[in-house]
Image 1 (spheres, rainbow, N blue to C red):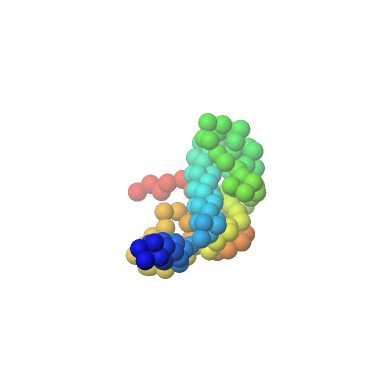
Image 2 (image 1 turned 90 degrees about the vertical axis):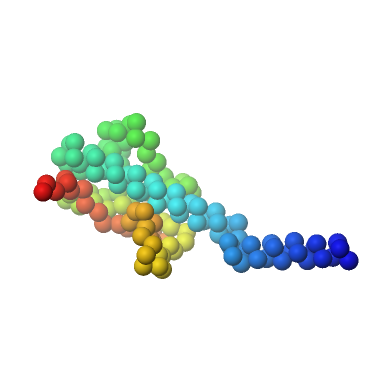
Length: 136
């Protein structure tokens, strides 16, 4: 009787964990998307730094890599897909990546750490600007 009770308790815990946390594959996809958001945020900060020191945007991610070799930038996502970068004008640029899950902030009090943390499913592009800080 004790063994049956323990088996039922373990199965209930496993099912409850899957319902509450999600399956291991879903957790893996969410972890990959978090890495993508982090990589894009790092690339964005490095583009802004490049713009402030060079007074121009890099034309390609390769230019950024050559100018900032010590930045430890990752230009491919965890699945091996390359991130996309396009310079639009002197200040504006676009970063794109493909996400495996949609991450929407549902609570108004919860603010994403970066603009990349709130994204839809599939290929997402973020239009950004690398403007110098305003003087007051």
